[in-house]
Amino acid sequence: MDRIFRSFVLGGRRMHLVEDAEVRAEDLRTGSATVHLEDEGCDQVVLVDQFRMSVPAGHPVIPDEDKYELRPLIEKVLDLGFDDDWITEITESARRHDMFRSPE
Amino acid sequence: MTVEDVDYTYSAADLERRTAMLGRLEGRGIEIGAFHSPLPVPDGVEVMYVDLLTSEAQRRYFPEVPDDAEIVEPFLIAPADDLKGIDTAALNFVLSSHLLEHISDPIAAIREWYRVLQPGGLLFVCLPDRRHTFDRTRVRTPLSHLCLDATEELGVPARDARDLEHYREWSRAVNYLEDPAQVDFWARHLQRIQYPIHFHCWHPEDFRELVDYLREQGATSFEVLDGVVLKNGYEFVYLLRKL
Image 1 (cartoon, rainbow over the protein chains, first blue to last red):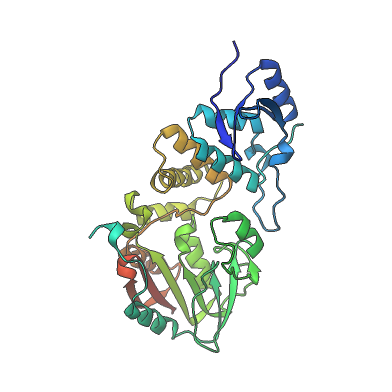
Image 2: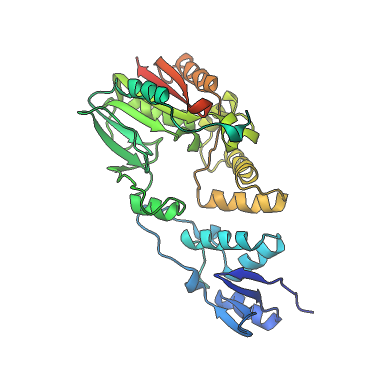
């Protein structure tokens, strides 16, 4: 049985991770996160590039081993029970510091 | 009076005392970590700014700073405890306001500031008092802890673990997280981005103890010229002279 993830609000839109195992595997392979947008009633693939941001000169460079993959990060913060504000805080902080790893 | 009731603004008397301390500056020196609040100095005094990041990078790093806040542009990008590019005994003064608590090895920083000062040069250090900030629920940092930080480089497991514990304290005290797993996750995230938390927190007499200890050890030799408590106890300031 697939996992059920709770819904959360990110960027002003309520969504949940699509639970289907094949979708999840594809997300992990491509570094993306497929979400179901609850108000729109459709799925959307969030690409890791949408969460990447160039950092200005002098900004600390985060080593690759300390970076996150997008879907596992969202799953992790959901598992830990962070609320929506924290999910935004964590993903935004990771974005601002260029902490998302691209797929191999 | 509770901590929340304290008036954290400078009174006229506070400003007068601080101005008197800063009024002793002359010549050329640096302010480290001035960010968007450079200290006022007397006319004719030349201040150069040192910071870890450019003003543009600081704006990205600290999005909570209002867009209209003017961040000073550093002339030197360098860690506060490694001022490469500044010659030994080159400066008349070093200014550091609400900075030392953000440095994971304060002894290294003080030694470095001592190095760049001329004999007779002044060190102005302003720090928050743990009891009047969000640090009030944290453990007051003992001198022994600072000594350990000074003997172990970053990357040494024990040192990294001590720093991580500070990030955990911060996550609980400042970010109000309670769940241990959430605390641990956020603390590790902050450590990864090297977020400049208050690594240590002190009372006024702790800084004096540190200065005396460093002199006893022969690491630095400062004379304390003045020490004041400002903003109803929120911050304390020491003015030291290199002997």
